[in-house]
Image (cartoon, rainbow, N blue to C red; front, side):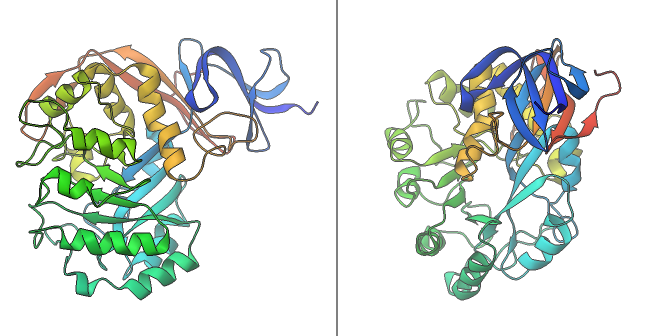
Length: 381
């Protein structure tokens, strides 16, 4: 048998998509995973991951990485040091600037990057400028052409439905966005932080595969919680019919009380993403990285396996990448993230500035993309 390029041994392998959780060794050859292999398998490079979790490459389902095209954006290459091998830009680009984003960022960055195309032509420029939500300005034909020309890149459409966003007073823009997404057979991701209508009305417009982002926002009068502090029945019904719920925490889109009440009521996010953006990275206590956000959900009481699933297998499924990303099964992309869990007292802040202190942090020790080690802590291996 041909020698492995890379052998990672002595770690605890957690691969929810493959049903693996326990001691094991992972092999990579020719950029692809060989799955679990014997500890004495011949390899050019051997990594000792004792005391660490060996995971499929993290997938950050909600980021803003149109660097140079939006004041919100961070450098996508910084994701590698955060253990993220695959990411989604969540509507930072619209049809007016998508091709610039694609050529300047997607084609040149190190992590794999997919796109949710904003239905508003300018995307999210940041720096105090908001999208124009007049549905008559949505360029349906141009959006359709881009989806046709970039079918592997554009994995969904995106719209923001927040009362704090200029011009959003009702769900009319969402209805048009939903119509566009259905016509293109794409899922729709909806920014639903402080929506301008009751949650039941918003969710009625979403179907299987659609994503409600910022599900624990806690702003305004329309959240996933009812007056009794429990998750609304219509929220559970939406999940039953295939709507996905993504926490996408960021800076202003997460509230400790809403998240804790929801989890206590047995409602965990389907997807855990960071909503990585400049304000989150620059301010302590917020979503500075996906592992930081995952640490917060461990503190909130989510079991480790469910936290890992929500950051790896679930987003891979939402992107239609099952079997390739989000798993270490044989033949999958050779993406691996190795993390340790250390005792710590991190500060977790919410959109009210409420301070909560955690008790541990997930720390990235190594990131492998397509079998190549791209990040490695100086004290690791």
